[in-house]
Length: 312
Image (cartoon, rainbow, N blue to C red; front, top):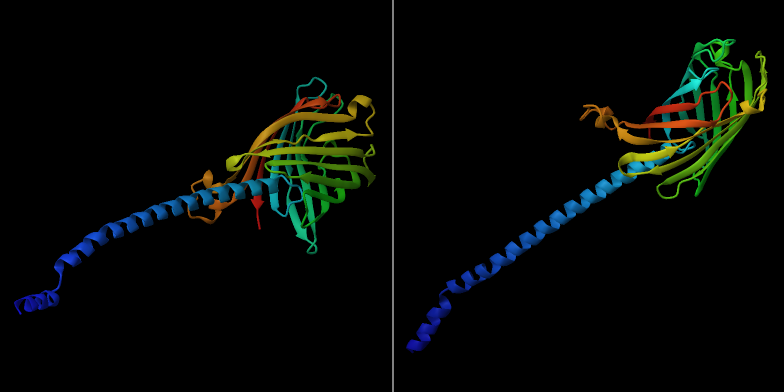
């Protein structure tokens, strides 16, 4: 009888020792879960940071490649400074040309774009010979209109007309001729590389200049894109004047290279939190020596370009 009453009391009383054991056994599990959750959060945050950094690098590389594509769907306004040295009869003259080159792509259809490229030169030229005068002012404007597929494959190309208008403010700064001709561009962009060439030829069709125009231009370009928006570039401008009086004055053949970087305006100016903080700019500098040149042509050129970008 006594045993039965004792058993009944034990069954009625709560077992504190069992609860404490459950709590003790549960605390390490909870701590482990919290630790695992913290580690998972750290891994996820680190992964997001790596992905974000990689995405930013990819975005910078993609935008850099667009700036290296003459028929890209990208509005830009380059200011290309060209200092030409050791020109003239005594190889002691300088020619400075600032090319303002707005590029505006226009969607024609779902399959075709027209890319309008206009070169507006501002020239400061010393007298290259005793019989010639120097001058400063606007040179001849050169608009080109490329028609290009909006969804190109591995080979990107464009075709269209190019013109030269006699807008020079002084006789020495232009040809005083209206000229026109075909233009073409072709390129490919495998991996970090960009290979291509831009070609045109123009013939004068009207004007008051003494000399008719028949000129050829080819600009091969090679770019290798590096991390953080940096890139290496070689883009010499090869020209030929088919109407030159001397055979040695036909070709200008430069050889050289340079380096460039794509950056945001906020990287160089205190613009944190302002709309212009993320405004993209492309800058490059390069030097080119003329292996072939006309008698009074410059021996070499220093080129510095700042390009303002307006991605859509």
